[in-house]
Length: 436
Ligand SMILES: [Zn+2]
Image (cartoon, rainbow, N blue to C red; front, top):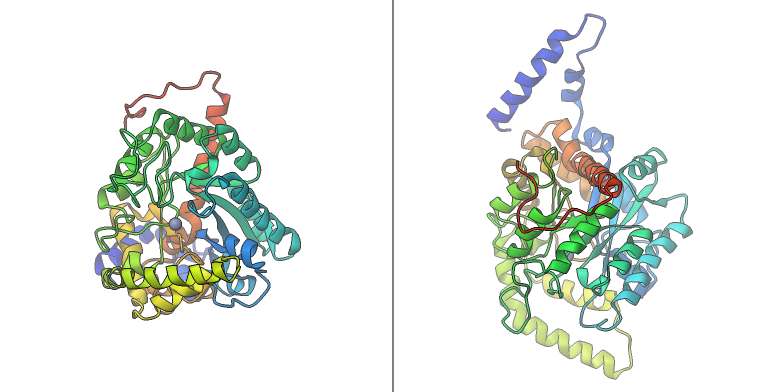
């Protein structure tokens, strides 16, 4: 436990105790006595990124079944007190070239179908209020986020259609740049065409339309240039659905300290700012793991390519579980980072961006390796226990587990209402529209 943090908690709690009348119990003492398990149970736990829809669609995976190598099912969610999951709608850009919208729609349908099949366990959710309702009903709230702006095929109409179908965030790019936004995955590739200043004029229109709809602007995966352009373009605060800290692990897809602070300060003049949801992937939380994975890449990629060719020759359809199993086999050759590596990242974001600007974005079912002890959503309480061991209060833990994200989601919804009430659309300029 760190003395400065403990001191701050005690100093804050003193006036509350002093104001209590003799008939009132000092609430702060009750909180101090809560076990990590009780704190975890008392929170609305929200994870903003899981790639499970591919399993559902390609492998007909049913969340009522055993995990079978995956990270998420109903049993694990219950055990880990997971209240809401954002299911990622991710379209592999090479495999589905020319059919992005079709694949997007099919993945969206897979999530709706899962909720329809298990109405007693899971319910579709479209707002912060829906997440709270699901929590009261002891059901998993299912939300959706599109991962990669290529899904809209340069059409604001498609963007609006996806919103109507329930999509509540969009990652401006995945690892591939699109016609209007650049990705950290190919920012240095001279063969890829990039925008002049991070977002094209159409890209700024996309961000504005997302603000107007109430679709959260997700900056995970984008290039640094696109990140800053999105922050100054967006009328609502922005967030990272699954990104870790670059100061600790030097992955280009992780966020610098300056970016962490920029997310915290994003949004209009009265904004409470955005949130950074920390990714659990071993390569994003440990430089040792990342280096080993990169060193293995030539051999791994050649072997995987040969295997895929072999399957194709045999007339097999390549499914998510097939490619995922290959990656996991290679990842298993590298020792997993300790759980403390993940906690270090959460702690770093909390210190740099602020305690009100950090959350969890696991990337479950999208990553071949996670830290020791985190084998599925059932292990989420271990994160709360580790945070409390480092001196985080029960209140701070509840913020990280979901409170911060709910506050941010509400603000995005409120901003959308304001924009919808405006008759004239604000002019898009290169200047930051807000003085803060
Ligand atoms: Zn991702």
